Every structure is written in structure tokens, then in C-alpha cells.
Length: 62
Image (cartoon, rainbow, N blue to C red; front, side, top):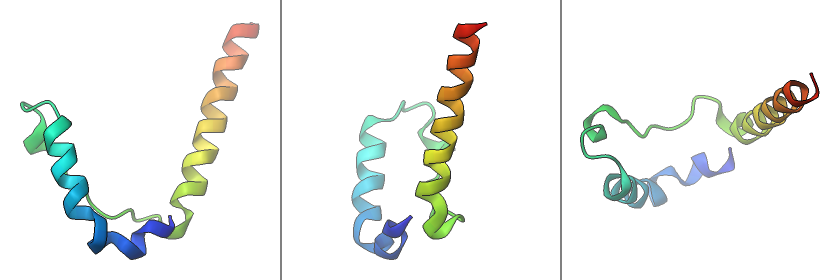
């Protein structure tokens, strides 16, 4: 979303922290890259959470 404009400010720290927390065996397979969704990334992610939660609710009802 809006953080993409500040990519250069926070990406190095994010990569360092992800490296510290990641499973070492998988670390070389992970890339941290800017989102191609631009400013819509947050909204699309939120919509995905809503649909995911809705799907879970429907499974419990059936």
C-alpha cells in the first residue's frame, strides 16, 4: 500500500529482521520485493481476509 513509497527507508531493516527470524534452510528461497499491487495492496489483502473469514464461517454452519 502506501509504504511502497518508503521502500528504501525500511527494506534493509525488514530484510535483516526476516533473516533473523526465518528458517535457515528456507532463507535462500525467500525474496522480499516491492508489491506489484501498489497502493491497492492493503485493500486487496483486507478483502482477502474477509473472504477467507467468510469461507470459514460457512464451513462451520454447514
